[in-house]
Amino acid sequence: MSGQLKEVRNRIKSIQSGQQITKAMKMVSAAKLRRAQDAIMLMRPYAVKLQEMLQNIVSNSEGNIDTPLAAQRQVEKVLIVVITSDRGLCGAFNSNLIKTAKRVIREKYAEQFEQGQVEILPIGKKGYDHFVQNGYKVNDKFWQLFGSLTFDHVKEAAAVALQGFTDGTYDAVEIVYSEFKNAATQIFVAEQFLPIAKVENKEKSGLKADFIFEPEKDTLIAELMPKILNTQFFKAILDSHASEHGARMTAMDKATENASELLRSLKISYNRARQAAITTELTEIVSGAAALAN
Image (cartoon, rainbow, N blue to C red; front, side, top):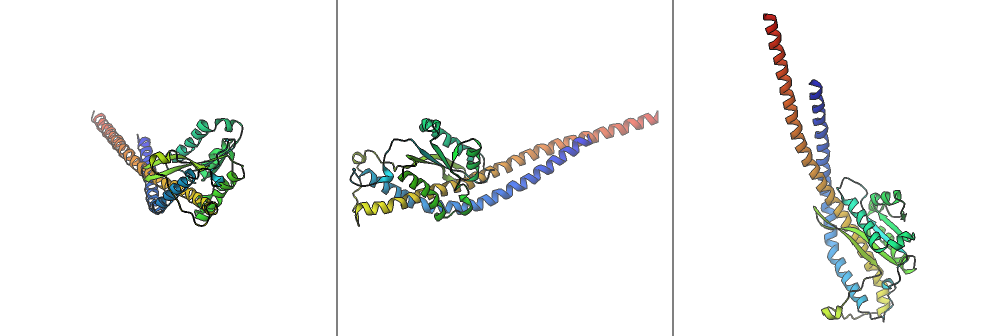
């Protein structure tokens, strides 16, 4: 009985230590989430409006503009950018992103994958480790990007996709990331990055945009397109970055609650075992006294 009590006491101490860690991690993630959330909320309206403008320009160009980044080609070689986190302890965040990437490959690029023409550009250690260990073709240059998350570094990663599509290394580029909604909600998205998607039925919807270009249209578009696409790439990374901290904060909060429930159960078990031990000891004392009296 004493051995059982000691084992339960050790478990209680262990769970209390773990609970302190999860509480601390929750607080750290909450602080990081606030900064990451502010960054994406400030960036998103700007990025969304730029994307709408870009799609309008491409959709209404009617073939009279040189837009190599919007060129539709037969898809033979594919680049998939998968944005995960560097660390775990964030619930199913990373596994859902990896599953989304695999679903895109399975549903859209199964033939190209069989031919070895699908390349993964992982951003984040968790995605990099998974795809390397499972034998995927991986570009390993930017998986440590979150170690220095600045627009200039993100632009270097985006340049791989832009230059690769322009020179024909890739015929399509997809981005898999988590769109941030709130701390408890992440939306896992697979989005076509290149070629730039055209918006269909613009005339029927009455949303056709009539732009006035100054200087010349070709010159302006050639200058603007890469900058807008760099912004879209940066937005996707900021979305995933905020989602990661939200997922980790939620996971640590749930872990803390589970620890409290487990502690409550163990304390009840400990008290019952202790009560049984005391009862047993009293019974033994009474029995011994009765034996001596006889």
